[in-house]
Length: 123
Image (cartoon, rainbow, N blue to C red; front, side, top):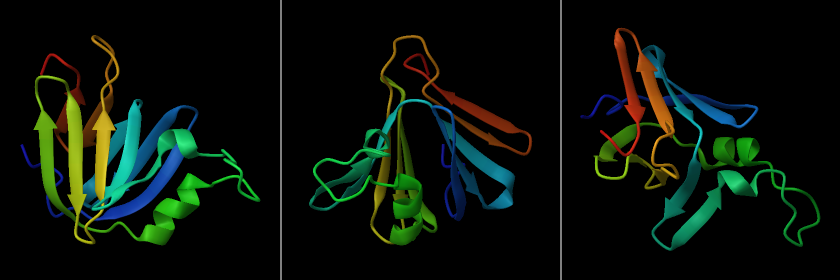
């Protein structure tokens, strides 16, 4: 299932505990689980890093950092049906991993025109 393939990331917002990624063609990804941005060398940041200081001079603003790394077009999409994890690969080599942390709760949702997909461990 490659519903977000070739879609461009337009905006990222945070509504309470839900991260919302708006994509082209009126698609959005709502994330309510642990997620992280990865590179070849490791983890760049996670949602849990938002507004944390970690010995820095100021708190990290993950919304700002997402803009700065310039995630654009989705070039790969994988769903782990056993665990309900979602992986998106972007054209600039960054990877977004949504990691399901529940045996029953919906970790993420992809919503688009006439389309909806929910990430659980019962896919």
